[in-house]
Amino acid sequence: MQYSDRAPVSGFGKATPNELVNSLQTKDLCTIGPIKKSVVSRVSPVRNIGNLFASFKTTNSSLETDTTINGRKNVTVLGFSTKKPTKTSTSTTTTTSTTTAPTSTTSTTTAPTTTTAPTAEPVLVATTDPLITTPTTSTTTNIIQTLLMPAVDISKNMLPAIGFSDIRIKPTTEIAPSSSGAFRIPCKVSHMSNDDPIVYPNQQGAAHHHTFFGNTNVNYKTNLETLSSTGNSTCLGGTMNRSAYWVPSMINTETNSPISPSGNILVYYKNGLIDGSQIKTPPKGLRIIAGDSKAKDNLVFNHSGFVCHPSSTSTRNSWPHTQDIPTGNNCETGDDLMFTVGFPQCWDAKNLDSPNHKDHMAYPVRVNNTAEFACPASHPVAIPHITVNVHYTIKATDDLTKWRLASDNYSFNGKNAGYSGHSDYVEGWDRPLIEGIVKNCINAKKECHAHLLGDGRMMY
Image 1: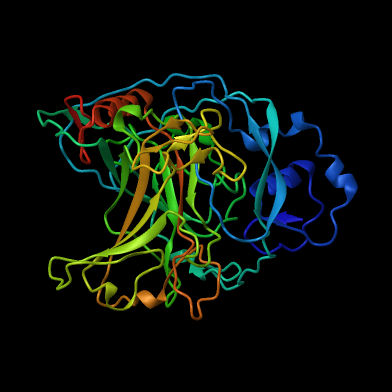
Image 2: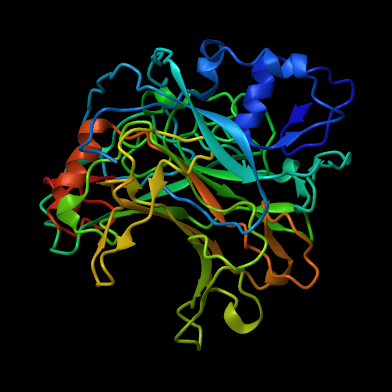
């Protein structure tokens, strides 16, 4: 038995109980031959697997997912949800340094010491997820290919960024104007890898290729419970935001190269469809996956898509928003191709994660066929509507018909690319600062742009 997006390795043996449960939890289970009853039976004592899914209930009902319909056959597997670990406090440090804009090559100091969260007693829950076929991997040097996903030459990964090791905020006299409630934070690319600490914890290189933003320490073995106190940050404001954001990489299939995004990604924290006064701060350590990495068409809207913004020299004055990567005349040289993913903003007020990393969250629903939206009763707590926007500048040599997302796991013949759009998010903010942003920008219905904190301070 082996669990990952990769092909079975040579000489692998019988699964341990923990490996079997972890593979069921992460849903990508590939088996060679029957799984013996004696192996499965050893998994039953719940107390022995509490560390496998350390996510985790919180009792704060004032705080607050996404169920994606994929239209394919599901199989019931077993996942876990555990109680909330003991709450720890996070101190805030402010600086009044110069106004130099952040870059991913700035020298930094040693990252803060990590803290270890206690193990919680697990609670069994059931979930569903599509069956996964046995993957195959290319043996070509530096080339990684899984199933029908595009081949990626990992030797062409961008160099990891250093990021900032301190909080970077200073006073300002600028006043945020009135709005429905919005805040944005720009973050540069941090690094690229085939890791995914949410879906494949402790499994190096088990995922499709990803591009990461924000926290520089994220890899397959990252302790997501201590993310807010470890690592540098490539975001404006430095370590005030150690959150991690990642998306499937954009791949040029002509060269097998992962394409580096242009400049910063822009992460929106807005009121969304909910009145700004009702928005609560995202709970510490919240994890969400939005979109659908298994999608192979646009039959179901998966809250992700693409749009080409015309450059200043373009003759076009409008552009379509599609679930696939635009081709033809929809994008021209110099245009900005934006890949966007919208996260659910309604939390169940209990779990920081769920077996499929979606069920603890939901999107707002319309109230009695009116124009008003609210969070469903099952997910009563509204948090900011988080949207990740990744930008790619179209060059004269680019052929968008050759671009695919690293997660596009379907034949390219006769189909457009990009349907598998999705994004992962792990909350890692300095708590007093994000609480202040929600209060002073979103609750107060102010437009804080991409630099204001709404309290007489700004990021730099």
